[in-house]
Image 1 (cartoon, rainbow, N blue to C red):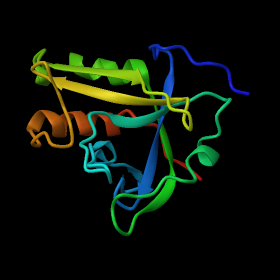
Image 2: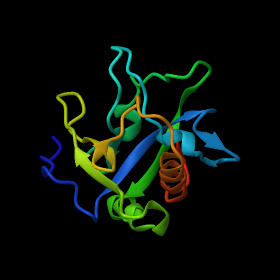
Image 3: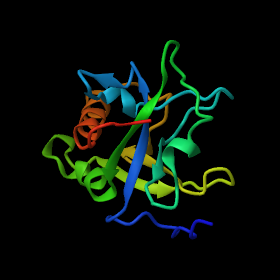
Image 4: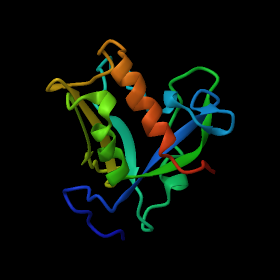
Length: 154
């Protein structure tokens, strides 16, 4: 039985982003499109980018077998790992001019106790799938993709 995770994602923790192919991959690397907010099947707009806290107690492949692609033609391919401290440090980039907050927060569920999310606030407003795409959002997506490790294939 996996250990209970802390109710805070520490800077030292790693998180895994499940990768769907081909839309989340560009030239063999994680593409910025892997970090987009989605409209859920319920019609709700996501207000975080789903990730899984990366701990040895959890088998990411087994845990995500039920995940379905939201883009037609995509299939579950693998995952990429990011460090929480690297995600949080994106806000320190001069391009974002201290108007952006980025964090990794736990969002556990019964089925996914290690579920977490990358949240972004611009000018103190939470970004959702309904937020218009701006240069800041495109930059954040590009930075998230750039700090990913190589894709671990399922």
